[in-house]
Image: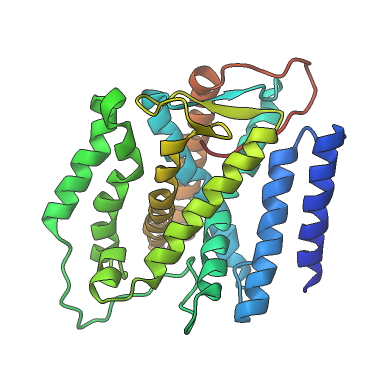
Amino acid sequence: MKPYGWFGLLLLLVSEYGLFKKIDPFYSWFYCFAWWSYILLADNLVLRLRGRSLLSGPRRELALMLPLSVLIWLLFEGYNLVVRNWAYSSVPSLIWERWTGYTLAFATVLPGVFVTADLIDSLFPGQNQSAASECERLGRTSSTKPSPFVFVAGLILTAAPFILPRYFFPAVWIGPIFLLDPLLEGMGYRSLSVTISSGERRRVWSLLLAGLACGILWEFWNFWATAKWIYSIPFCGNWKIFEMPLLGFLGFPPFALECYILYHVLRACVLRCSSRTSRVALYVTIAVFCFSMYEGIDHRTVIGFAAYLGRSVGLWVLG
């Protein structure tokens, strides 16, 4: 095992102990410690099994992935401003600490999903496929065309939660798949629908299982954290695993597919910005959007601040 793998394992054990004994900073910042240590450990296992991994690859890939991870999760936070399915409790009372927490926690979403998908793929029999953070270009001679019917269905499902949030909130976790997967194909990249139609379903299965695995970890670590999210989901009953209603776990597998599609669509957009000026303008736009969403989360999603001013409390990521 590489040194960063051992460090990840040690950090995970220490953070768990710090949470149990209420020792800061692990007690206060437990969620971030847990997720970043998991990413280090899981990536090292992928490296050992496959000979390559996300963290051992080009640094540029990770540098691009982290801000896009924050951006992508904030798109779902935007949905939540309307559907109101989750809320944050006991968050840091100081804005610099709170917003730093948002950034560090939301940045774990894509690396966590992709590393887990690669780890699961490595455990399947047969030849491993490309990493989940990679997207294959379609050949010049490819005759595939995005289906307009799938695109329209995706547009309707994506918009429905804004119109009737009480009844169409589940569409948050499926609508963007149908809306953006054809767009990915139209941009010249191999979409999930093309992958499925060609009989290569390994990518889809590894992502679905990664979504479920990450969902279980998200909910497990959230349950023990000082600051946490809680749910208010209509029609899901009172049966819960940790804080999540049992039926809510059905949203995690398609969420991983959304992460894959959104990341590769946004990544393609960034790479198409050929000039330095256009890329700076794009990142400034992303930053403005993120800070605007942070304000929205503070005013509509946060339901309670830490009991003691100035004390760090646990970080969180998604609901």
